[in-house]
Length: 107
Length: 383
Image 1 (cartoon, helix red, strand yellow):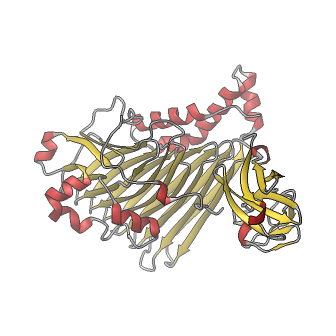
Image 2 (image 1 turned 180 degrees about the vertical axis):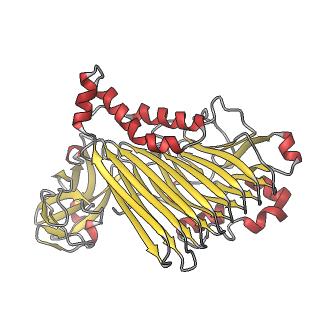
Image 3 (image 1 turned 120 degrees about the horizontal axis):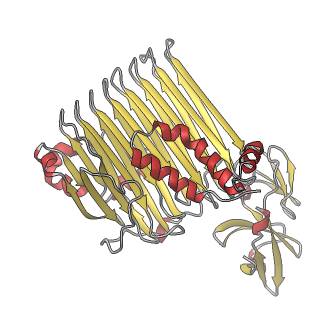
């Protein structure tokens, strides 16, 4: 998993928005904030909820099931009931294309 | 823990029209003298055999769809009518609409089958199994059925969407063993239900080793006074496997006994979810219900969710449940290492010791040994 995979076109993700992507047999969320892109697993580490269905404000996304919060830049957990970070993945932008490298070690 | 099936895409799978492949060797029936054997590959029957003496007594055993054509009048009244409900969810409906091949065991009133019968369901890499198992023991009948599943290799993909119906008549005794040993890329969805009649007994042993994701609903309904059921579950998960078992022991009438014991050992980043319920109806006085789930976590990234439950409407019952989850005790490993065992040998011994309580309840020696061996082979060394 040491390679970058095409995830989306830059124009596919509006500024301030997010896109749910199936990548390497897993679901990840690609966020865009200005010219920056971030990518984390679509999994709340509390009980496996879909973060992509939760509310996102700035750099914080909340799980719709029990309200756990994560930093979209690092996957760090910011609010209980989750206690473990969710996996975050490296992103690079090349022209109009966004690439993601799945970070297995962070699981 | 949610069971996330968003990565499951039904349109990637299709039923095969022929059994084009080699059936892997049996894990459970090696060296066992059998009364009958049947097998399927990709939900197509590859043939079945039954001791002619049993056939002469009216026993039916083999491919469900073929036997249904020949003996429909005896089988149809029991097929998805009073046991598994096709309307429970999408997978039960999918199965009811498209089930294919499967296994039938029909034992007439009073017939006792001493030797075990064996059923093997195999799929190809990426193949589909929609097999339906229907076991009907009429009043006073006795039988042992050993069922197992297999894939061509450990990482093989595929889909199993199946159902098991066990109908145990009054005074009948059934021992049923079910080993789920699909490849680690297989999606496994199953609805399983048993009806146990008056003074009848069911011993149901489950080994769950394979599948990428398994979602199993297992339901035992005690419908005749004096019925007893014992369920023994052994699960071993590794890699990113996710096995979810929902069990229900339903006491519908008085003076029945149910005893569920599930044990799971988890390594790597695997997950298990066990949700058990003892349900006692208002009429079911003098119920004796027990359920227990123990989990042994072999790595810091494995996770086991255990949710036992009781729903009791009667007021004269004995119902107990318990759940434990923990890591391997380092002192035990140190003790074993002091006596010359390697760390891996020590962990393997501890894991097998953990499962011994389940193995001790399994009355079929070949099954006990095969399960212990299959689990021991999978244990790796951890720091």
